[in-house]
Length: 407
Image (tube, rainbow, N blue to C red; front, side, top):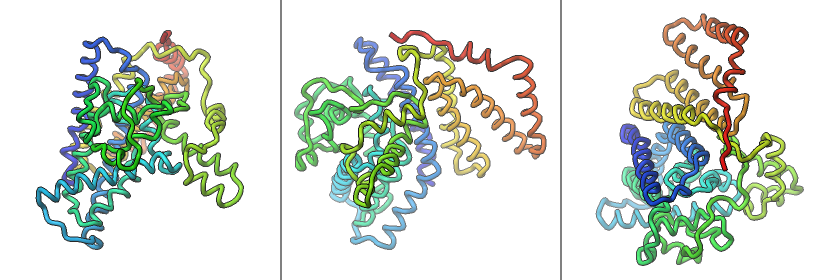
């Protein structure tokens, strides 16, 4: 896959721009732009999306070529005017994909993760899931179907994605004259707001004229309040990805008749029963005794995110040269680490067993590589013996799960 090596630099570039944004926020004395827990959560979701997309992106590209080679309507040549038409067509398709992502429950379940964050900065741009990538790929298929060559489409999607990344910041003020044509950080900030006047506005990714044409444009007036109208009460990595699917299923179970069940899946999120999420949160999530406490041992989280980022970068660069067992090992190791990061933010005591799981995964992998897999029980026995002898879980909770007051 020809774009893999290029994509290896995506994560380092992301952290470079994030560092610059953070330093500029400090210089302008605007610390409220960044929130520790939310930033960690955003970055974790971004790492997961980049990781899983390594396994599915090639299928996306193959699908574009399949449609282009067998079903395209027109033979469109490569010219300046064609590139202009492609960038307009790409943003037009995005507008309708994005709008339906807010108006249809099934699509909103994939897109809602992008709107969880109550902060608006470059980390929020990373909140994209593979579910969302799969759905929007279905919309992008319109472009090769029309007759745009897949290589042009893929190039334009990279440009499109890069542009939208830079619209996720509060450090650029309003540029009124530019907003007549282009999406600016102010325009996109309105889209991320939970204020009633800002809801379901500004769907365009590069251009504002689609929103103006279809009546969904709203300029920034009062400072937006970012996030959901009904915020999540957790930073759990897994819950953030899957909670709305659970909500749809719960609504589907409560509904009677085909029409009601259909609306549960494909109806509007505005009609979702608002008691469902609190009910599910009580069922699946722990209640925090003190919501104003946070993890003291932050460096442990930073180390895990840093190692995950480094491993993902190397993994991306070497992806095509690795065998299946290498790929599965790295995939599972990073995903378990990201779940661990979310559980640390939630101060979940069961994360201690995730630590053992990671150790067991690493030792089993190296035993497999050395054709010694039959000895997998040895590290397992050592871990059990060490736990019984030294009560490591107690020390782990006392050191790693230390708390401090967040306010």
